[in-house]
Image (cartoon, rainbow, N blue to C red; front, side, top):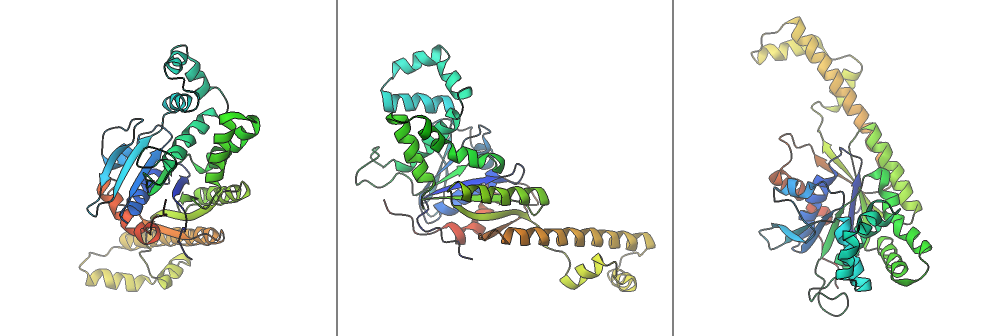
Length: 337
């Protein structure tokens, strides 16, 4: 199935906790930058996952370069913080400036970003929306090239992604007029347009797969466009299909195993053979379960991209290995301004 994202500029990455969502988002940003291009990688959960992945100092509220690729591409990182985003919003739309700082002093900013329903998510998405529109001359309109060729958003997990992306639509309904209504509607149009796709990261395990499939249905129902399902930490089978079937049925041939071990110079004992047979059965059961889960994912009708398990852990070098796998799917001619 094709993975040509066409007009997509904003790639939203979600996934159940523990699936490696931030790692995949980081690798995707490198793949997109390999065109070459300039990519903004944004996180909104305050976990500093980007800085840890690329082994750079903690990100602040300003866009900061985290990687420059040999071919000229580069990735900027940003950790969106609701309080700073609200102050920027107040200045942009209401020119409050110093008055906004007074509101912060009296606790109004903290109240708005922690208590008021939906405001926090509106601000987090709004910052990404602004970066998507910004041009190299600092303006949001005109003929200057766009600042970024693509944007990757390390978004909240699948259990919250539908609510997170649709909050601006709800805000637009509440605020019937004014700049809040106008911006909320504009953000919703972006998120539901061909410029935006939502990629879902999962493992070949029952709970992550079920949550992924539920999220795909929710996104479609809310008018958002799922892009791909990225299966992370894939382990290749150690046995051929015939041997997997025999192991599941408990029909692996003990004499053949003893003979092969002896030919390899291994001291064969009944305990060793029985232990190997038990491990082979466990491995075959895992492979069989993963195949069932992969078939369920295929039923969603989305492109599936598989990333290998990194046995030595995740660091900036291994993220580049994953990026190499993603390049054929995500590196393309960037969307013109």
